[in-house]
Length: 182
Image (cartoon, rainbow, N blue to C red; front, side):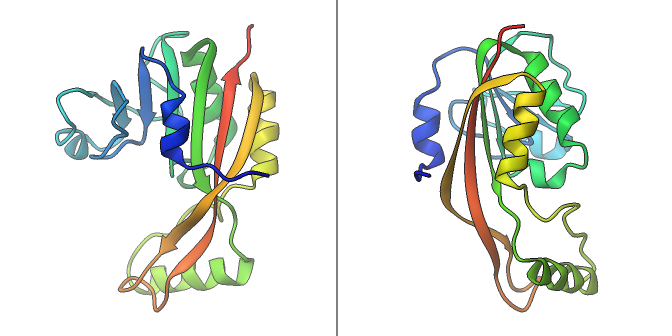
């Protein structure tokens, strides 16, 4: 397995409608549309990115309208990955690109300790302990993606002081997939 960073993968995207899911206030520079649940963060988007309040599980985008969809650090927050990935596939044109950057699972005892510390500090924890790269590849195939490439992409920081007593980390993976023709 090779190692690649997000900026290299973004350089592979061509112009067109590039949507970032869960963009927050800091979308990738090439995003033409940013979708997030929080309207407050969307108010801070750059003028070059069209802000859309929406849920990644039910995207407010027409079928086949996007040239590329990017999800950075979103999937480990989501309970229904198949639904989210199916929505991304629906919105992509045939041969459209999906980029997913997210964390792999950390050792279970570390995740349990991190969750305990976050709850003790009054914070919510993640609904899942990262995303298994092999399971994600299988889900991508099931919902209609082809040419799936998964690469290591450094280290993901899951939680840090002052929210926890130490920094919790896990490997990061970048998944690139092409929407198959239906």
